[in-house]
Length: 338
Picture (tube, rainbow, N blue to C red):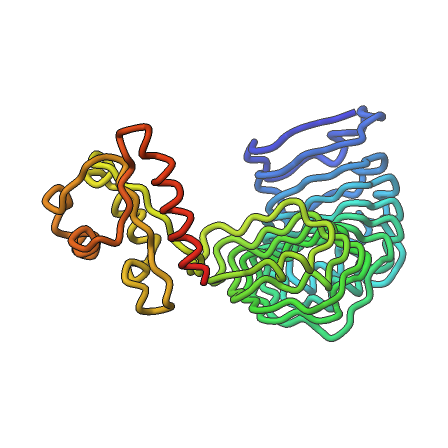
């Protein structure tokens, strides 16, 4: 039922090579040297994966009556040859559910949407790593489409071209700065590697459960931003340039000061938090063990300056004094809140 021939350097296959394989349903010819496909191979196939193809003739597509999965990723397809492969607007591949055209030289999103709208069973479409840069104001899509991957393109804006039926949308690694389109049934949204300055409003995604927005230019988001997401339970927003706007509490001991972690913590607090001049917010320094200014490396000059003042708390070694310590810390935090 399944025949796998990837990476064998095949340049051609005899027309009758698969004649005896009457029950063949899946054929993998990826990573070979084939440039044309023979329609006689595919009369009963349900899945086909093929590499090094610049066109699959429409005649071949017509004979793939049982095909449900077609993977032509990382090939030489263009908009023109894709029209030939999918037979224009002529009905073909009536059982197709998954199409993967990623990594091809496709440039017209309107062309691919027009070609696939006839596939009444299509649920998954991967057109990532292509040359798409413009999104039309509207596009026809099959009503069954649920998963769309257009990552690794060159979009700078989105439009109502995106189908309202989507449950999973991947727009990672584009040049997007905002997202205001309403997608009522979307469950997963992937926006990493773009140029977002803030989280898109959750009001556009009432059913969103997963948002991945790493490696953008986010610098902050607050409680109200998150509250706009009604069902979100998985947020990945790492590798952004967040600016901390809360009170920074730093715990210090000797081996910490002498390690690289001290530098990391000070960098994270942006240094200026130690004197509060930028926002009126200051750090609260807590010494976990007796520590003098001379124990602090000279490169941490602001920490040394703070150590020279009295604006720090020291963790008492005597247990009877620790209640007083916690009281002082609570008072300090209340003072900063005020």
